Image (spheres, rainbow, N blue to C red):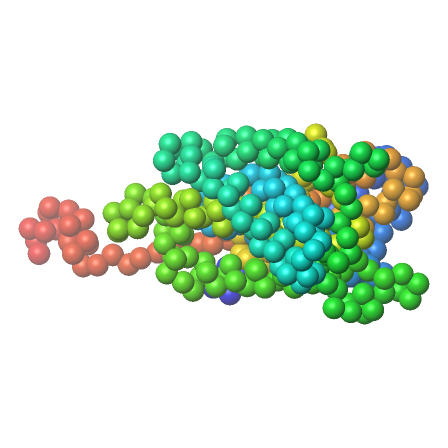
Length: 376
């Protein structure tokens, strides 16, 4: 077990290093004079002040949750590529409740928004789950479709419910509807400015621990994983495979919906815009899940690392790099993490020796030439 853990860590570290090196080469080709200062900013900016550390943790919360969303489905034999749509559905209902239900006490309003976001994400995730379970429609195809349907549906809902014509976006979320910071901004500050950190990072960590317990310590989690390993064998053992497929996609969707709520329920008056591009957090969750090898506890660290690299990468624009180059470097570093399974498989194939078993006497007797058998 310890040796496998070493392979996991080394595989994840290797793909991150290779991704960083490729990113540095792109910076070097684009602007050789500023390449090293920009690259060192990627490596150090997140730790350069307590405020930046707080912002890393703030950005990590929704990334960890979308990573958990992808990882949960993957652990149960499914590939949820629809996290972006589920994220968007959860974000909308959270913002809607925060904007429209201001008559409710703040604590109740925040709790309702978080729960509703998880429920809406679960309902959106149930669609590819039902299609997979009862019509054998591959979840990758159906979840891609629900991504775009969810995006345009949310655009329609924003325009017809909480759209602010003057600003072209939704009505701003009031501070009373934001997740509380519990004084964390006074810790993660550089003196002049404070971080946007709130309890979102604690929500993400607690959810990761809960998902780990469900998958590894409960009968329900065992049944979900059994269906993922071998649906026919699980069905033969009396496990309801169709129900578990739907439940798996619903839980996965609820995590992505929760990520949407955590992303938008911040104390900066954030608003939602009508967009024509899918939420990148959902696809970022794929790399986070792969980098953490679908281990819920490891995803806490892989999500934080991706957030750290993203925050530092965004600062390289100050060194004269165009936004296209910056986004290219960040994307290569982050999405290169998807190769971690391939790297781990390669390392195992090169380092693990095949186990040799000693043949028993009966096997030796069967292999003995006829002449020797007669002599014996």
